[in-house]
Image (tube, rainbow, N blue to C red; front, side):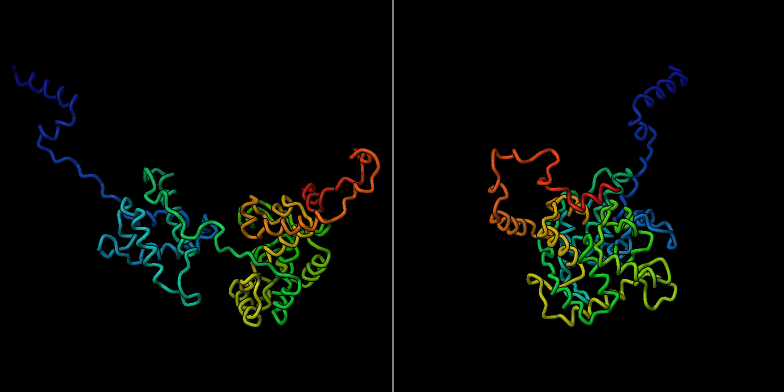
Length: 379
């Protein structure tokens, strides 16, 4: 067999059996690229969220995400008897054991303002790690998330605020408070369970002054869904007075800003801290009063008034009865309300004839739709 024939046969073999190429040619097979570390994956995720310091982040709460990332990547943990960090681990080793080790290390830390780090805080920080791995799986960098199956330390609805203000308690809390804080909290208490930032950043164009409703677009709400909020007559008068004196577009402008910018979060936090200190004796079902309690209070008060649960959910922006129940003790409120209803005399007791005979299609005895539903139909 000539050289040409040998070469031809050898090429045929190597073509059909590429696994023999390195053995025949004594080549060293190329090394597999090293597995990326968690810190490298986080940096890629962070660069996607905010490509440049001056760029607008793709995630609204990225300020919290950035600080959570530093703690996730740099906190020293003990894993299999060795000191390391989550950021230094290869992605595949950042499993549930590593997460448990991080939780233990984080639980031993304290914060300047609030003392020990709460389970809810650790859950929130770890949720950013879950989001990062999910992003890489969707992008194809990883085949699966190594933290799949990670449980929350704080179970859903466990330990959530469930207290609510009465009118007297709210006024006691606001006695001596900053006038602007008092106006903002009364608006949240009486109108649609508005969150703190929804009121703080409320602008003139977001109020329909003729129909007396507030219209929040999806980028202004927590769940991304637009909301239509019914405003009481007293609060509409307050908003009109605010509009008349506002130097800019914000209805609750910063008193220290001549251009009329919104009240900074830090300033509002200071007002709330002073109000809380003055009312250190006040407890709402055993809980210290906060701004967010106005949200629960509005829902509880509307249910007591007889508003349909569906209308209360729509105005407050809750997506399910289960979520609403976790914040408002809906079961207890509804049960007490039902006790009041069943003890009322029935209007059918004075009627003559078969049940329903007195009611026509247009009978005024049929309960009309609520004011909330009527307002919602306009949009």
